[in-house]
Amino acid sequence: MSVKQSITEKLTAALSPTHLEVINESDNHHVPPNSESHFKVIVSSQQFVGKRLIGRHRVVNEALADEFANGLHALSIHTFTPEEWAIESAVPVSPRCKG
Image (cartoon, rainbow, N blue to C red; front, top):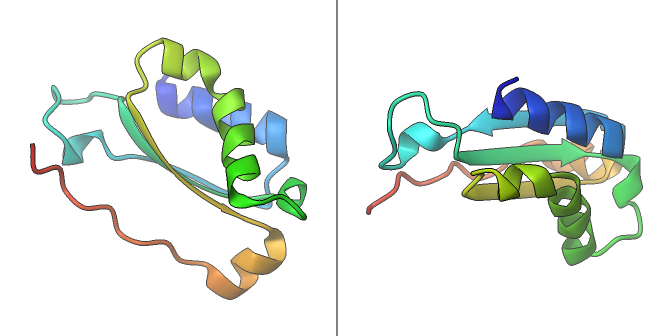
């Protein structure tokens, strides 16, 4: 199973998201072709209602602990409640790695 697929399955199981995007951004970094080491996650879930940003990120990081232990190097996390996502529905474009 690919890392992207694993992230998608684990976040779906943990959060029952109303919106989920898992974007492999490894090609923006100096890694071998077809790497799966850098991802952006955009997720909207009812479970984020009443949680501060740090609490939302903890939920995501805990769900993906195995991925971090097995080579996931970087994760850009963008979390929203369904109501926030209905208003926002956009996240910043990730910069290309300068290193």
